[in-house]
Image (tube, rainbow, N blue to C red; front, side, top):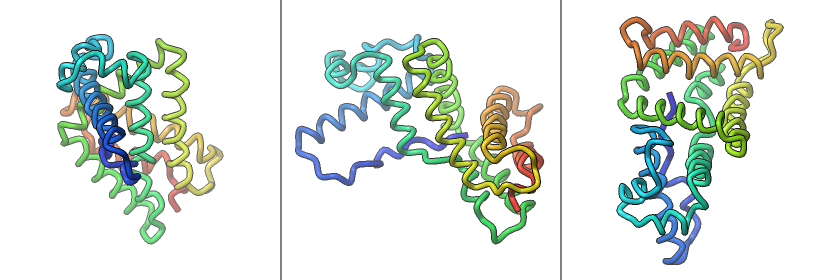
Length: 210
């Protein structure tokens, strides 16, 4: 589904020892929140528990984040910085191969990701983030922006083709397959095989891959 955040992203700048300690503290809290929220849900893990999981005090949470909503958005921001687009994008832009070859490559990559246990945890976390955004308006628009950025990455790899559906709309449908099939497959892998993804994307995107 989604690759995990690159923990080294954005660390090229030179930091003072104090800034480095603060960055490490934030990263530890985000890592702990990511694990606990995937396992228990955002409402199922308190800030005390997140701090404990990170080996820190609750005071460390509030010295870095205004509260749970701020921590949620910081985690989403880390995903945004580390994930410029879906794993399908490089294959979409590979004009050296035929649409069928690219669809097959996309499908193989998707199947590989579905076999990774971390994929299940990320899927759970993304569902939690979506639910949080649906219930919290102030966070919802930020989460919507994250999805929008991912759709733009897909649309940028599509040609206009002969379809009456715009690249942007086809990108929305591709996202629906990307996440919707993953949720069904992870719950019921025998009856919803991950191998459906490649043919599904090929049918959806069609001539836009040419």
